[in-house]
Every structure is written in structure tokens, then in C-alpha cells.
Length: 293
Image 1: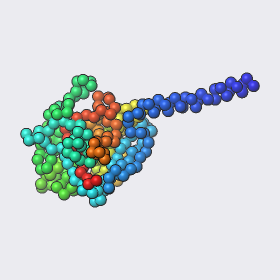
Image 2 (image 1 turned 180 degrees about the vertical axis):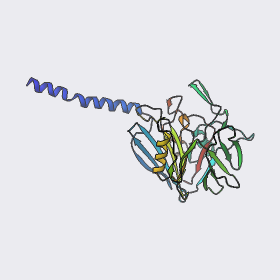
Image 3 (image 1 turned 90 degrees about the vertical axis):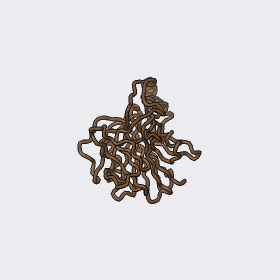
Image 4 (image 1 turned 45 degrees about the horizontal axis):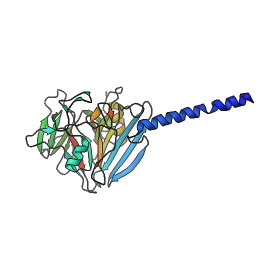
């Protein structure tokens, strides 16, 4: 009888340990999107997916699939410059509220920038910055990308909303550059890094340009989402159907925001700046999408 009691006593320990781990995980994820798969229509023609991966490392990806033919009132906006032709830093949520767009993501990398601590960083909201690559808004070019020795891939958007990568139209309307090509002619670009994990942002289109794909991967958050390599980012957006895709700025800049029913921003991912989860980084430019609700 003593052996039976002793066995019964220890039998509950694995279960208790699992409950403890589950409790720690729950507390750790409070205030962030739940790490569960999601598929939800946000607007007409716009579907949101939350993809969860645990192996070979934790990764949470947020994906918007936009049917450009059926999304009501679809129009695009790249952050416009001020009257002097320069641009000031804003968080993605600030950009969404200021310009009353329904969807917003971060754009290109920029300079100057540093992040030494939560008290020593640049830029703050309102500080002057310059995008790394070629940038235009409403036909006004305000960054030419000449300071970058490695030319950046560029997304051009016509006045009618057609999207084209790396082939500038005769009359440039909107233009937003990124970090590197991920997918070309339906194939993942060779030689993409497959070891370094960071938060990531990507944008792509299918072969005929009807479907637009936007991906933001959370990162730098142990036990929640470690991030993605460029190779993994390319695989995610290709799996959704991208024929052409580029990465935008990543790291602490990666943010995906939508407009809520009350007009205020809802952050769909878990951005991280200065290693503080939920903190948005002010960035130079953004891509905004207008929709009739």
C-alpha cells in the first residue's frame, strides 16, 4: 500500500509542471496577440491570417491578403513630405491616424538612427529623417537613394493603383523602397540569409497583380516569437502566392496597424523597440491603404 501511495503522490508532478509552464507562458504573452492561428476578414476584400510556428524556433507571422479588385475604395498612400520636401518620423499608428488610412505598415529603412537605450535613441516622433531608398508621394520625389551603395528594390504605385516592382513608370506617383528582393518570377531569390532572426516586414503581389500580400513577423521576444530569417520570410510570402516580393525595413520598425471601428489604430502584431514589447518605433515612411468601410 505504501508503494501505491508513493506512486500516486509523484504521478501528479508532470501535470503540475505542465500547468506551471502554461501559466508562465500565459503571463508572458499578456498584452500581445494570442499565439493561436487566426483567419478573419477585416474589410471587404481584406483577409488577415495569423500563422504560428514552433519549430525550428518560435515565430508568429501576421499576413494580410488583399484582393485589389474587390477591396472597396482601394487607394494607396506613401508618407508625404512636408512643405520643405523633408519628412519627419512617425510611428505607424500616428501615420494611420494622421492620414485616416485603414491599413498601415512601416516602410523603408532610414537615417539617422540609433538605439542605445530607452532614454538614448533617435528618432523621436517629429524628428527629421531620410529614407534609405527612392521614395515619392503624390508625384513628389523626396529621397533618391543615391547615398546607398547597394540599390534598393522599389515598389511603384500608379495613380490608378497598379503596383510594379523595380520598373518605374513614365509618371511616378507613389514609390516606396525596401531592403532586398525576396521573390522574383515566382522563385525565392538565391543566397538569402537563413540564420539571422529578426522581426521582418515584406510586401508582394501575385503574377497578374490582383492579389497583394503584406507580412509582418514578430521577433526579439523569447518564448513568444524569435523572428524570421530572410529565407523564411520569402517562404512565407511565396506560400501565399507572391510572384514578386521585397522585404521592407525590419527589426524594431516592423509594425502592422488597422483602423478600428472607433477610428483609432489597432496594432495587429507585437512590435518591439529598444527591446520593449508593444513599443512602436517612429520611422521615416509608411505604406497606407484607404478603404471604404
